[in-house]
Image (cartoon, rainbow over all chains, first blue to last red; front, top):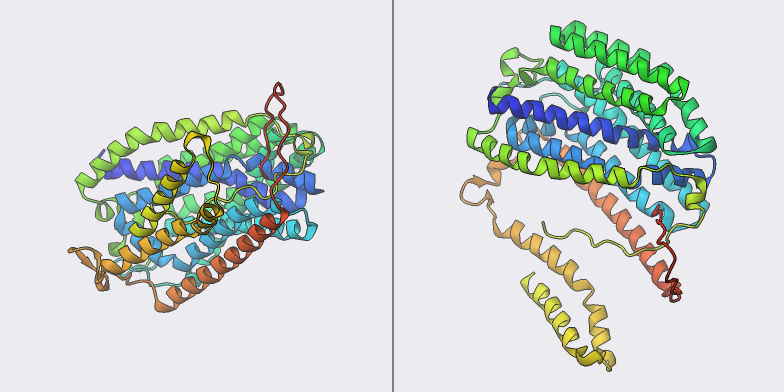
Length: 346
Length: 128
């Protein structure tokens, strides 16, 4: 295995880590207006993801950063080609991050309701668009001989891309409902469990159709196995959610997302961005990668820092492992804490 | 950038000097200057960015890649105008909200001194 292949696998791991982790906090954001009956409920929901959502986004930064450094041509074609789609995702992520901080700074119900709507939109939009983006990457996009994307935003909104979007939207919502059941108590926990079963009724058929279509047109024997296992894990998760086995259900949706990303990257291999114009114009692991020396330096950096990052992220989850109750947040939140300075030099 | 940064450091050093032997500064002028110096780090950060971005023109990577050559071929001018407009409006909106919250926070005044509860276990505070 050469270093470019190693980095392709590592990038797949980073994206699956991102979807497994940020998937549930997107899901909680999407469910916020539906499961939070009053402000206390909604604060329990926001605080359930409060200590971890921004750490989860680190996986997106590292995935994007690894693509940029290890496969600059892939990054250039993808981020230029998907410019407006990624702008929408970025705006949603900015607004969403601000919402969590701003909603508790005033008790005014209208103020909070506005931010809650923005949390819903800022969670649902990226949850949909990541699926659209990855379905299109596997399907192939119009690239010319210079690997420049020649389509536009509407090119990405084909039926297969939209199906992929609905799959991530429903899977993340399911993942979030199960996470919420795992982290809360009482009525909210029961509502989360019922929501998980309801969402699973949509997520299971959508994911099954998407995986079947994907394997039919892009499949390989190895990814047929991962796709089948992803489907089994999803059905198992839905069943565990129905039985109220929250830990097993969460493990099930996490494994589903992991294997789904593995399937998509496996189908993509050895391409990184296939051209639908001509197979000769496709970007591959070999023609899109950085020079060997860059990859060697990156590998050493990753070997040293990945355990540190995994360690402190795991520690955060351990610190906040207890279930949240309504009485935990009976007091009003800390209003107007010190603001963090903006835009320091890197 | 360097001037504003050094000025902030100098002010801090003067403040430290004035606290010798537990004498806090007695005159009001130091507090007034300290209050106005709140702007210094923001100005330093902004000036630093403007300095580096303008100073390296016409290069993106000095001596290796010109700005003209580093323009993305697949991104249209209209896309760039859209993103620039969206970011400008978004950040202007966020700045207005942050300003409103800050003014509101300042008007509310400093909280009363918290009573010392020596033996109580510290309770986790949920931030949101």
